[in-house]
Length: 268
Ligand SMILES: [Zn+2]
View 1 (cartoon, rainbow, N blue to C red):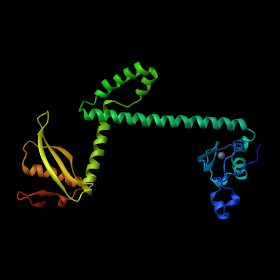
View 2 (view 1 turned 60 degrees about the vertical axis):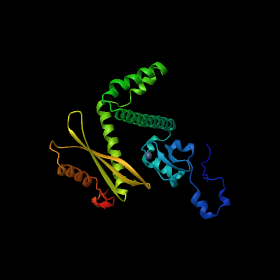
View 3 (view 1 turned 90 degrees about the vertical axis):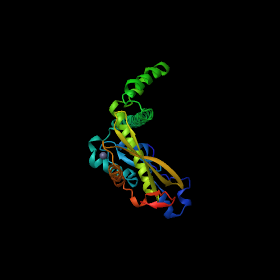
View 4 (view 1 turned 180 degrees about the vertical axis):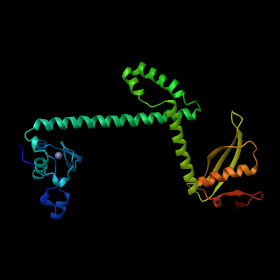
């Protein structure tokens, strides 16, 4: 059995550096023999922490010395003395599990991202949400199966792409865009509004509101909101709807400016 060792994290030998600095820089390193008393390590290579494979307790780097690790072992797990192979099995099982977890997280992150990308395409093309499940996914499966085999098809089937999921993703993205536009608008020293009215497919009147702001020393125009108008649309109704939204968005009316017929900027 090799002797337990303590190494400095940099190449400078301990004797070459001032005593105080040496004390700060030294991090106790893990030694493979610590496995015989049930200890593995985790964390940064430069600052490893001993972790008990039996109870999962993580100790500080200062405890990475045989005396402290042995104390933990003898007070808590003495019944496991001389079971070296048992600790080896525990370590292998822990490594397998952590690899599995990392793989699951990576795949799950990628499938989530793919799901958002598909939702964005559906929204931009203004297609029904069901198209993802009914056409896009089966088409992807056929293409991947033909080009890369059934394994690739199995991977693509993990992407959450149902009607409800696509609808939820589009809602999340539009809420995020709305918050970004509102934040930019709040940061702008002034803003101006432009209103438009349109009728949708069902014959319902819709009010479209555009906002013009100053962002990054430039004048930027953004779509602000779209609200359904009541059947009889008076100026008062329109103002009520816009006023309600501006207050909801926390935009101060005194920052709203317009251009009067004589060409002079006026506040509202
Ligand atoms: Zn323990």
